[in-house]
Amino acid sequence: MNEKFLNLPEAKQQKIIDGAIQVFAENDYKHASTDQMAALAGISKGLLFYYFKNKKNLYLYLYDHIMNTIIRLIEDTNFKDVHDFFELFELSIRVKSELMKKNHYMNGFILKAKYEENEAVKEELDRRNQVFLEEMFPRWFPEVDFSKFREDVSPEDVFMLLYYLGDGYMRDAVHRPDFDLDRICEDYERWMGWVKKSVYREECL
Image (cartoon, rainbow, N blue to C red; front, top):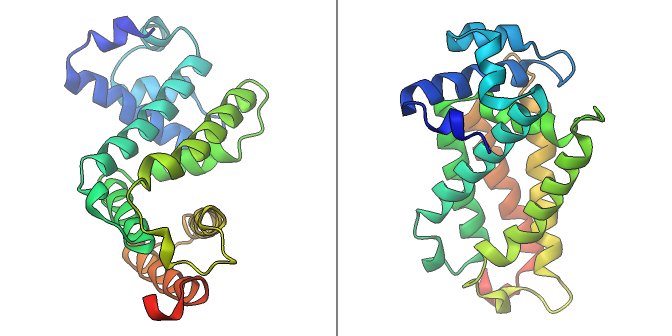
């Protein structure tokens, strides 16, 4: 799939990807203009569809591309050497924030994708998001010492709490005129510290 696109020089692929991500990040699926994407990429609309067949295929390709990029960057770190649950969460935040600094439209795209209601892509997005959530915990926390948690606390529940806390904060903050990624990361890490104090056994704090 998308073989014609993947045969392009890497620089040209990236220009097309960046242009399309920007337009999807600034608009919902229905109102994202493929004419604008093509213009930003410096190609014709017909050529864009030659590479991706239709808007839906392009959208889902970009979603998979961004998620795979995040996964690859995290797994390129020494994450398996990190045994503390919260330190590992902080590592993932730093990785994602550095990626966002390089291309802040990626975060806008992913946030919109999580709440996209257009029937053309909603079912596929819901399936992808569910798979991602189900795979994240066992994939990224294989060496974590869960004995630090109180007996009445589920690490999986804490994982989901932190995930949705960060998701909700970013969804609100990304639309603010004073958006500051470093401040957001500091806020989130401070909040994680509060959560840690409530779920870890006292002797592990």
